[in-house]
Image (cartoon, rainbow, N blue to C red; front, side, top):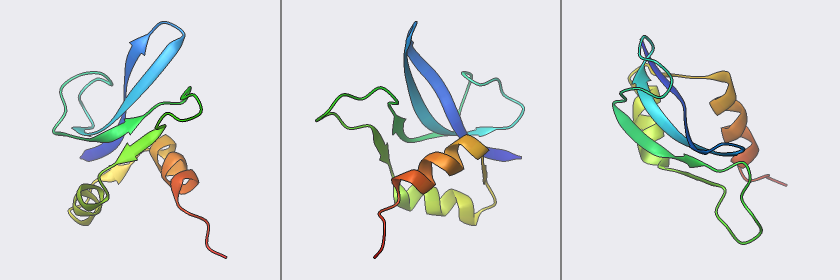
Length: 83
């Protein structure tokens, strides 16, 4: 099964995550198929906290990739609010 999940990077106490498409059996920070974007939970004001290639995300979901619960939550928070 193919999953869309976070892969941790950064330093101790300064996390940085890549949003990747990977095989479910591969370890968290191991080999991945494609990098879709990144998530920086401690982004300062004026820094970009989240970037994701929406076209590639749509493609991978259309071929059956499942997003992890954490990635789903991040994507929901990032969606623009409609009035």
